Length: 373
Ligand code: HEC
Ligand SMILES: [Cu+2]
Image (cartoon, rainbow, N blue to C red; front, top):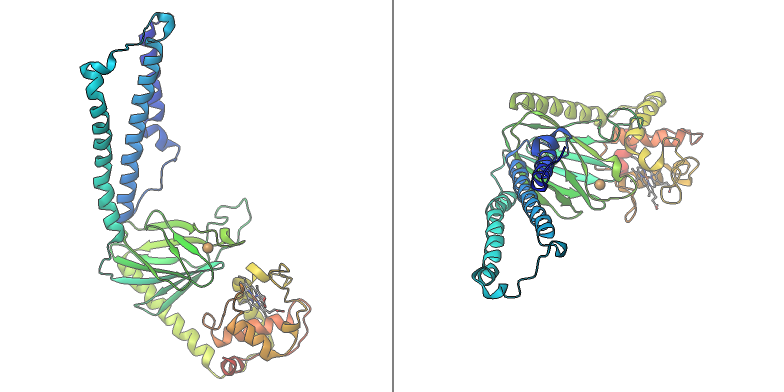
């Protein structure tokens, strides 16, 4: 089949456009995640606008360059026009090109400014949640309701679905509500990042950064820490469940009841048996401490010390309680006193003193923790 040169060029251009067209790209899921809030919709639209403009410009320029290379090649006898700068086109193109470029810039600047304004706007919040990053988990404090959710990585095998993406406790939020997030961290920099529903801001120890959103669609949204925060950086995924306002209120009521029951249980001056403390202690240890001290208690020395056979975990109870409640400033060992109640600390410490061949043999009761605080 013989095609004229122009027809071939036309065919190539149309084919190229088809391959790169929106629908073809969408099939492969290469785009940003589908936005589910006003602010992320606005960020998404800005991305599409700039991506489209850049795409069209690159196509026009490529076609132009190829056309000029072919048409004005020396072998076809083309000669340079040495007087071009004296003609009308030569004179006015210096003006024309910047005008076109500025026009394109301004067409992005308008929507860009609008989005930036939205990012910085502080709405009247109907719900405020303090989002705290720690090595390696997220803590969500619902400031209006006194509810706290501590969200840890849910362990999976590498080939299972949900590997490094799922958590034990979901972060539940209501739909169609003005939500304010207060971002902070307890140890190093983290960044709470869920691209479908909120913009990303760094979480910095000692500082509080504010972002807000209004989620428009119920569903489950995924994210992760977006600031390299240490060896467990990959182990702090985020899962947000957005539900109707009614469901959210029910959930808050349930969580409040759970919290007050746990507080009552912890503060009752009950003396617990070794079996009960060890069982609870193991569960809490696995949830809170294994990222550093490992399931077998052997840690990852020299950074994360072994608790198996450690002088502190087999020595005086007071020293052991002191480390767990107050932490060790300047190390990754956090002060757990504010995050765990008396019963929980008692159970974990009892477990550490009697697991993995440690044989301190003694029990620590909630009352001991209360007086050690
Ligand atoms: C993010 C990492 C990390 C997590 C999670 C963590 N620890 Fe530690 N832990 C450390 C580090 C680091 C040290 C060493 C501190 C130092 O240099 O004295 C330490 C020290 C200790 C010690 C003293 C051990 C010794 O022999 O010096 C105890 C006891 C302890 N941790 C208990 C716990 C308990 C209980 C938990 C869970 C509630 C926990 N840790 C969670 C990092 C961690
Ligand atoms: Cu992090």
